[in-house]
Length: 184
Picture 1 (cartoon, rainbow, N blue to C red):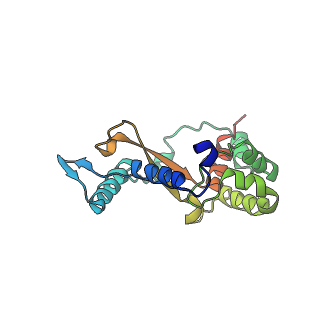
Picture 2: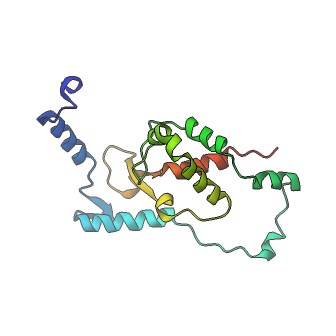
Picture 3: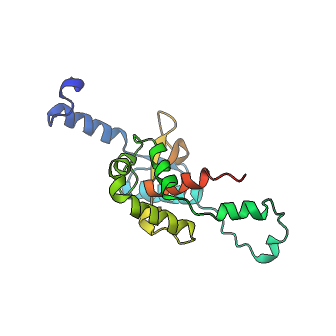
């Protein structure tokens, strides 16, 4: 039935959507021996748990500490790392990406970038260059959606979930460009 009628706006489709929606809801979570069932309490508990899990301690490094770290790169290596990526390199990164991946918070997928690259390439390239020149990403580009994937069948605690970050494609482009930079 799904193969023949699944994409039509019929009862089968709506039942499947509702079933998935119900399966992904959290109706109760155990915290400190108490089962939280009210949505607002579950939400506060989850926010607290994952903020603690994903937030590290702030560390400020001063110049005195830098002298103690040995230099691992030569002047030539450092100059190579300071080189800005070319438009062709950025386009290559986009074409190497899996187009079937989930879209980030902005709703744009890799497929969108590939289909529209001729139109948006200059803006994408400018954003990548700005990042490599030391400018911070605008808040929207750096945004990430956290998705919770159950690690077990009967989820009872927040530790039973594996958090997965879905970031915007523009953020992935920069990350992949950095990762492919190799020092000779």
